[in-house]
Image (cartoon, rainbow, N blue to C red; front, side, top):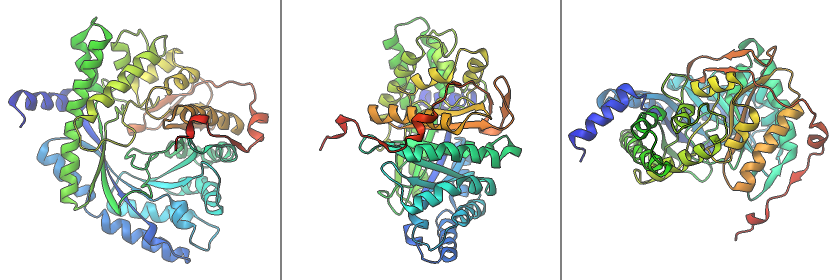
Length: 452
């Protein structure tokens, strides 16, 4: 039972420290929607999603009002669409994205993820059709998010897919140029993608998951920042313990919401993802947590070590507070969505190379980073390859979500609004990686992948 002190502490976290449930995400299997007729398949997809998720938004709102816990987003993730669309006799996969978009709008959710393909070892014809359709699909839809897994520790890195994704990202930016390349904010390239991630843009419902499931993503950078203010100047092991205790409290709230949503929607509870997901709001920043540990500015020397401590302590504290912790679970460092990261990038302390180093010890990777609009596709592919290599060798999930914004140059700012925030355009190396990327093929899996 919660005592009065714990209840008051939780109220303060919600009221003053930006604590919230970032998302309730319903995962839905669409494997039963496969059909040789593409139109029939799209109709089945729309019907199944709207039937299963009909009450998702209302349930989230009811829980929020009854418990007083802010629930920012209600989302849906589905089976990687390449697996579903591959059964249909069609060359055009965009109607599948539009069916997802219509279903998401009918249900009233914020986003739907799963316009995805898993190509870590090779591409099927369906995978390639879906990947090549992404620019048009993200241009013609509003709520659809797309992800492609190009590598894994067990399979290595599919460099043909990496090469293709550099061009796809550029084409997506061009097709959504009137919105500052906004389509790229809904497209992420993974290595070691997980099947139960509730966060966009990378969420999809893995084939090893149940027919439908409820996953919850919590957040609380502001709570952790506030907690660390009480241990100023104390040793780093004290800092770690403080973060662990705070993560435990935050995750318990997520477990409560997940169980309640699962019961009300008659849907199995999947996981709680205890990631610290920042927002552009002041006081809700991962960068400010790192600075509270003693760094003058996020990005200076010591930043990677501080982030490693934070990520580990979040996992250790949260895992004891839930019966099932999953997803990505750690600390996110999306530049445009974190006011401290934005400030550090504008000051020049935080650069793409330093962010890459930080991704070795945090959740996911190079996230929501604006780069000049004239950045070559091969350079984008090379950045993806570097990040995938970190994930492959270190047996962790890494990802890239770059925004090559048409017409923008270093020093300009891209405004996306809402949780997507704003991003200063950051420089990338001008020296060419084209010959390396044009080789294609596959980077073999590391030796330690042979663990059977």
